[in-house]
Length: 166
Image 1 (tube, one colour):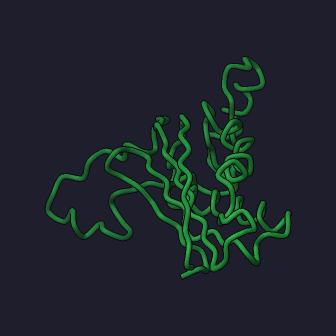
Image 2 (cartoon, helix red, strand yellow):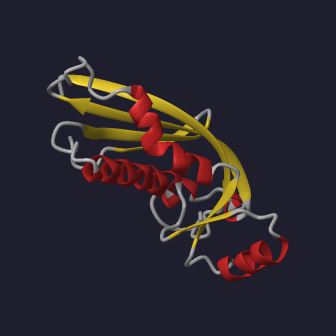
């Protein structure tokens, strides 16, 4: 893409990586001979997320832009407002039925149910797909592409999703 722009969003949310198990899977060999730490991310916890979306185009609009930042903000505003201060939970998580019941009973737990384990990687793809669908819905997907989505969970940990652009 000749031109790229990016827009950054911030939101607070909780989640739990209910599938985390440090004793096997990719990278587990790094812990051979070491004491395995507790699987911290299976606990309910939260992050101050930073989301960056990068869009690109080989042409500029009649206003000499890839797309106005205002429109990028509006494309994601409702989703960001909905997910902000929520608890992101996989519907397949064994805790989901009970947390849903508590949320309905007390109204003080804002759930954001998803169909995947809410890792940083899976959430980055979720935001990518959402923005791509928004562009498609208004007929812009041929002119404007989602290049990547970067999701920071902490100041030192991020996930990036590139889709099919690269």
